[in-house]
Length: 134
Image (cartoon, rainbow, N blue to C red):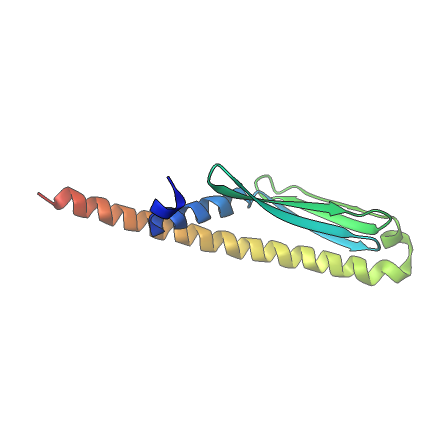
């Protein structure tokens, strides 16, 4: 369906669909040093795809990922964050941000579920109205 012929409902549904597909993994990165982050948006088959590239050449970094389906949490970090007291506050801030990010995702999931329920209720009402028409 071409973008200009999509209804507001179709556009909303597509946005919800894209948001849900991005909710499977939470990634939190803290890096100190030479960091390069790039982001590009590409239109593929009528769907906007955003890709992000990250390079941490010569940087000290902590990477945490949470698989939101399985609940698995993994964290890898440069040993400086463990052994060097100068990096301890950065490590602690990373762990706080990880918890905050997880809380935000939990709230976003509840919001999306509410939106999906609302859309479902609207569709049910539309179908009921169509069925009752002669």
